[in-house]
Amino acid sequence: MPVRHRARLSVGLMLVASGVLMGASPAWAQVPDPAPDSSLPGGTLITQLLGWLKYASIAAAVAGLLIGGIATGVGHFGSSYSASSAGRKWVLGGVGAAMLAGLAHTIAMTVYNAT
Image (cartoon, rainbow, N blue to C red; front, side, top):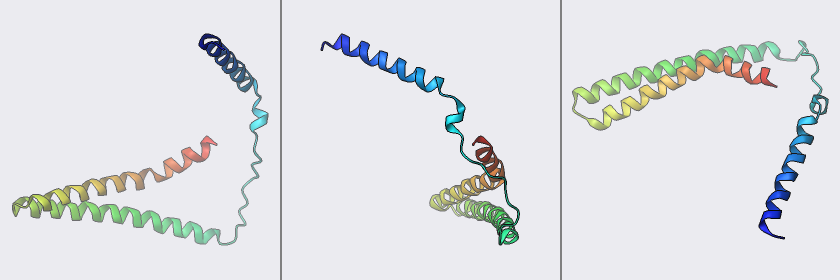
């Protein structure tokens, strides 16, 4: 089979496949989604643990910022490039952790609502 015919055949098959997929109704993709049950055993404990994790992540981010600031200052005034460089990495890590901790709820709700 010449290359030209194979290319036409593959294009035709792609068009047919895309037509079938686009014509599929959303009912094919329905997944059962039961209503949430508030009588989950240990639900209050889970909520309490998530609250503790929230505050622990903010504390870790602030600690990273403080450690990085101190290391950068010591490295700068002590003329130690390696200490200053490590301090900047701690600061960037603290900023990233703070951003992630602050956006965790938004990210989780966006992913949850996208399904």
